[in-house]
Image 1: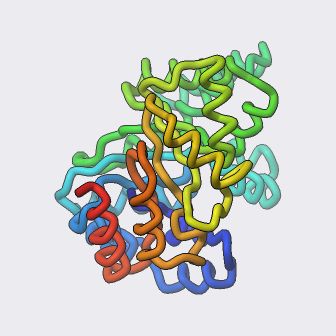
Image 2: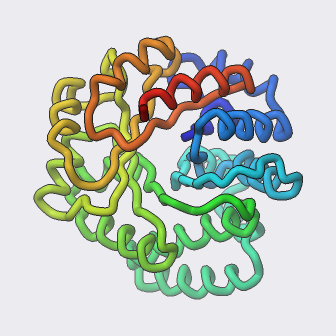
Image 3: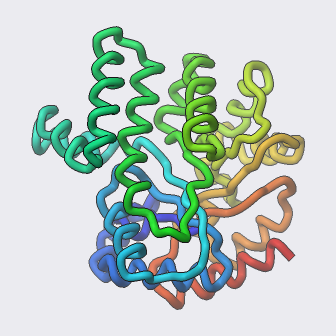
Length: 292
């Protein structure tokens, strides 16, 4: 999968490098990078909601027909930094207006009704469902016809917090909602893979779920340890696991990453960011060899 970090100015190793990289990209160039990646073996795009850049990317791919290849969409929500920044700049009312302005008319009515009931009753489960519907509506309305919603990921900020408090109901409701309403695979991003697997083994089935979590040679973001994450992966037989942070935020070379990934069993896929057509061609041509 194509990751969106280079497109939205995120680097876990150097924010200065991330800012320099994003200055060289515009929406048209990003669309070209995605098309090149798809032609070289990528099968999907995983991206943060509600980052505005990703909304514009999908609009451009749809409007200009940048790619004719079928591909999957793997949105991750919520991207908390966007909300914090908007709330600081515009206040909570301004944030709410921005969120509602992106929705189609019909979706606004549904979200207002469900969200209003959730706020009055202070029902966190209902609030989560209303939020998912609100954010997905604007993106699904602009997605290219050849793009299919395959997995909806809950962000690690929510996942790892829910794990800490043992909130089974949060996971259950998200799984049910994504399955029933969107006919997509529920997904969870976590930086505590071993704990996640243990928790779900005791409380919830991992069947028909996808987990995205870091895997790399130096153990970057792999908690509580690389060895324990690898052990749980080797024993994991239900659901799918996508590796992220395979380059350790750029610390490792692509060759190092591919060599390490070859040693792992039970991986379903890999998410990695690319910042140019040449970078996309080199990256996904090499990653495609993992499937052979």
